[in-house]
Length: 209
Image 1 (tube, one colour):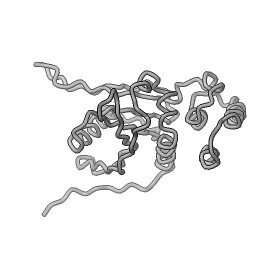
Image 2: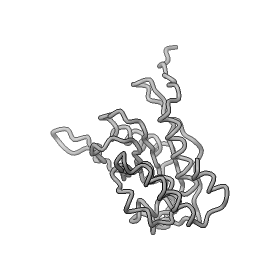
Image 3: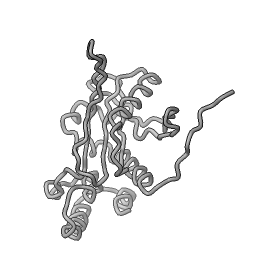
Image 4: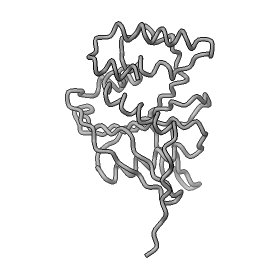
């Protein structure tokens, strides 16, 4: 019986970085949403959040597999929904990124049959504007318009966040946009931020990684 080959890529540095970002989002989930998606935050009941088991999406066309990052089952406006937070640390431009977001969404919806809010977190150092929409529109009609929320960290001004006591902000400060000569100042501001925070020793150790 013929089977499609699946290429299991070696774990590159960017994959380790993605795993760390995923753990950070899970550890400081509410703080992350509050800081970077403030319009979404008030609609979520954070007393009732459960993280789902790791999913693996198999792309048989390109012969690759991809771990689907953070899946959180939440009450959004009092209804059961799933937040899919996809982290992207690979700096190589991929024109099909919006399509991949749609494919992940389709896979998850087919499995869970619940409304899904997709979010992309881009932590690479390329500043090029990335689309947040995937469309299928043959000449006869608009068949599909898929949209997702996006956080492009390098486009964030680190100075706008240094007065924050939010641990998710502190953890992601070094991935925001700054000049090479500001590197030391960013590190100093990070240390000032974490000394102000009311967090437990385990969380403090996590931030210091």
